[in-house]
Image 1 (tube, helix red, strand yellow):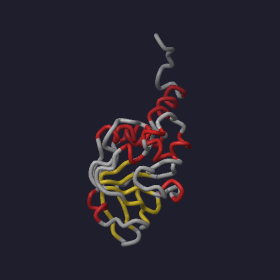
Image 2: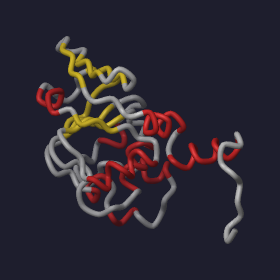
Image 3: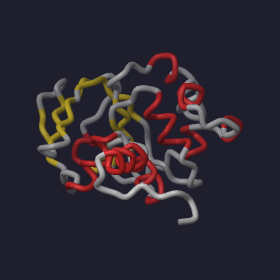
Length: 172
């Protein structure tokens, strides 16, 4: 994936990503309209499909709301790269199909507007603006499969449809 980066600092919490007043909906397109509003009012109007968010320590801290990664993904963000992530945000992001990468060395070189290339398969980030490359730990196969499918729900549905998982009714 290739895209322009948006750079934010440490401890970006879920309320900055999607303010609580918008939690009455779980409609992705509506959430995308308010993505990052608590931190950067221009983001939702200016972000382009394929752009990436780069941040410091503890990205996604705060509440465990799944709305935050949904808003980011629905806004067209291809992935989030940070020094570190809040644990629950990390799982929520993978579960909805949003790739997130911990790569402190790449974050150190980030300046808003740079062009980056991220290769999830090889575990490589290339800062195309500076011509620098940074390795990261690639996702294990089961997490790659979740991301490739578009998240846990899509992955499970495809496994049921293919017969890999039995179809059961609630209460069985």
